[in-house]
Image (cartoon, rainbow, N blue to C red; front, side, top):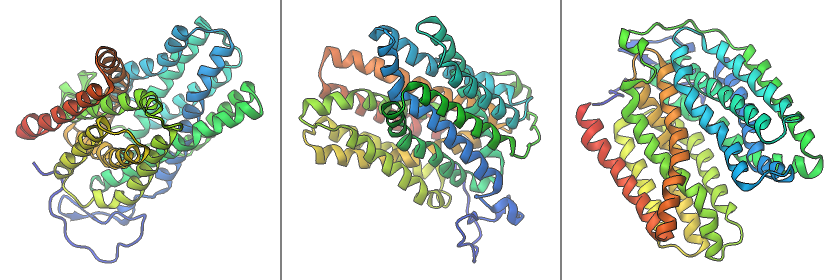
Length: 409
């Protein structure tokens, strides 16, 4: 099945804020609908960037804060992981609620959740008060994340969707590159109270930004089954493929630093910096390329990039080979996620809310489940066996696409 059929050739569309395909369903669309870098798109990107900064500033700093507050390692693991668990659990419900509530309302609510919880870190002590704050922040993240991607999916032509989503993901990737550095700088120079106040200020910026967005009318589901189900069944196949991809990535993120140190590499962060650079470069330069290609034809090469990278990693011992695997998986990751997201939206029905809720909840599940399962494999075997197990998962993902997803169409 092809989701991007042949498009008429168009001249004069060299502007970076214009989709190269100003046609939809065989008829010309208005120039406003053909643009990617619209006012609402930019505002939503700014809000997502601010949210990403809050999230990534806290990733390296909260474990240090909890340790200084007297928490033991087990408690720290629970308190840090509670946010992802709450976000994963809440996203499908947020997606279904978007069938009745405009995305802008959820974006405002998510911003308020982020602002209140960032301020609450100043007062919440470990264990139970802090756990409640983390759960509430996770709920807010589930609301905001689902609504933001649903909003982006709806503002403009479907023909530009993969390009729009690719550029939108850049805001999160950019925050991921800057947030940890900023967070560590703030606690080293000014202390944790200043960090939490800075996160509160960023949340206030989010609230101001999303408050300026245009309200999009609610799209009612085209079927009763679509309106009743919490999970978007039609979007499950690409969501499962994305889940398997994040099992691989989550496992690498969890165990590569220790693996690299054991191999004599003193700064494993270079690997993740290289991945981040490739993500930013791939999504910045590849957005328009992805819009020109058939969605299904681009999926296998991206999955193969995952397989190839972990296959090389299993037999690597030096920093140059580690960086090579970072380049390969960074390119695959940069292209695969927006493509699968578009694929899910194209299959998922008339309402993007449940699709995004399903898609992103499985992202969280993959990030959480991968390290748990691969940790058990690593404990029983070796790093090489663990990485080769990830190769098998990648090959299974490729087989699932060819023999299940594509075959059923």
